[in-house]
Image: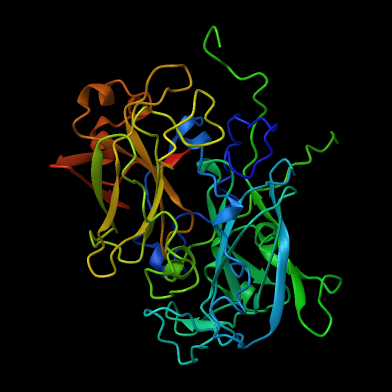
Length: 250
Length: 204
């Protein structure tokens, strides 16, 4: 049990049912790629078994010094990525409001011009030789995390003739169980492109979309260096196991 | 008005998009030097207990075309049916097997390969044993929320016949969508996102 406090009993209760009306549905026709990639039959629902209640643990020991610093982790010695310097910070919580310690967060993003370092991205904007676009960190005891990067640029994509993605950072999150596995995207407060984006608008509830918009936090900036955005992520919460059904004798 | 339950809502999912490799398998897509290796790329070592097997998985869209930009994660028990996880309270799992793997589909062929071991049987909530299985989680461009399913094994007919999850599938004709075909030491598994052979996906 690396990194976790030795006297903390792991929780084993089943997770709250996922509210699939809050998530985007599989089929969102205005996001065209979803049309042929969306399952059409009903999902098979069942209460979590051990296979969903367990999950891998990632220890802080696997992290490199620059893993949470996208400004420097791909840059040549003495150089740094180009763009608006920002800090992204927040907490990983569960639906009960409890911090999730030891959660692995992985992020990826375009550079400040809106270009990804990927052979499938042919956008005109140039690559930044000092920017790779990936980072990772593990949450602390209170579920808190922070990383440093440059603000990604918006970019056009071939969905409609003139569709643009708002500036965004992709987040992949591992909580304590495979049932909590989640990938989402963080958007930036005040970006008018958010409300025009077919991927964002796959989420039907405006309040749900707003939970993916990071707030500019001028109290957490580093003066003369970087602005800060606060972004909390919420993973599924779990039932108390106090009154769980158990086979006789357990 | 009653009291508030004070619950938060889970963050809504968004697609992993076409550039998921940058974040999750950067070495695979040519971003070297940031991490020493891609997380989850190696599952077994010389000390790992259990039968070595390969999984050859493809994900097919509604036209039958394999996705070339998907990413698959697997999660499984060790050869004794124990998960390497703090929530595993029965006893300690094989320390040489984390049980978690991550692979992108090949950008040309769409094939995704895992080298792992065959898992043991894990108890269901009521103590009955589930058949050996591997949990799959699939993300890609066009997939708005990660798809959860299981891979079972074609040479475990008896165990599969008494598996409590497979037993819940009302339309029996769909059960084979979760069973990988053994070919030598390789299990071949096609995930169909749509169509007549649409894989049974889970909400759990």
